[in-house]
Amino acid sequence: MAILVTRPAPDNERTAARLRARGHDVLLAPMLRFEPAAFHIDADRKIAAVIVTSANALHALADHPQRRRLLALRLLAVGGRTAQAAREAGFADVVAADGDAASLRDLVLSEARARRLKTSRPLLYLAASDRAHDLGADLGARGFDVDTVTAYRMATIGELPAEVGAALAAGAIEAVLHYSARSARAFVAAVQAAGVEITALALPQCCISEAVASVLRDDGATQVAVAHAPDEDAMLAALARALPPSGADA
Image (cartoon, rainbow, N blue to C red):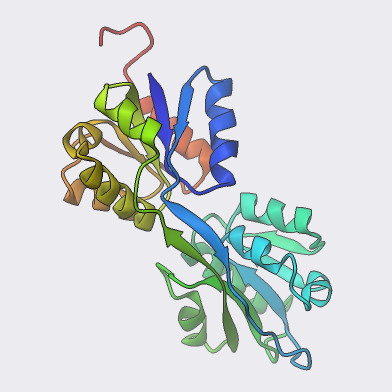
């Protein structure tokens, strides 16, 4: 029996490695695909700090002509994993929020109150084309000048890998991990298209947030476990809660 991971590459491989280290078999069905977008940053505009809500924004920055200038700036990241990715990308001055857009907004407010940000200068928000939370508008309503640029998009993948469809049909998957509402919707559409919707949604669905869980519940899932925090450790804990105890009867 395998755990099905629906998050995009390359993060799905990291999740798979952690699951395998815990003794699970793993199948991958990424429901979204990273696509960088061409974006312009005014070289003459003085920026106070960079803000990112995903490590994907850092992938999008990799070949940008303004990359070296931005690496010298303070970076405010949505959570610890994204902060680590920022350091690996070359940012030296990195601060992490608690894993969601609201905590990143609060971090920006805290940094400004502590005068660690020059509020006379704009913030540069490297954003996705589809945003569950408009952080730029949120901060703008609080008096910040935010330059929001679309640095990447996550394109929907419309079908399951053949081996995943076969495994669902054979009852060889024991739980599914979901990391965003968009990917959860794409998963539901894909299992419907493959004709395995009933089987797939009868499985335990482990979700990184209540917003993701609501997508699965609305489409008929009855075994839904929600992570207590929006991070990988909490997702693995949700999976442990969702699965029957080791040695229990199937």
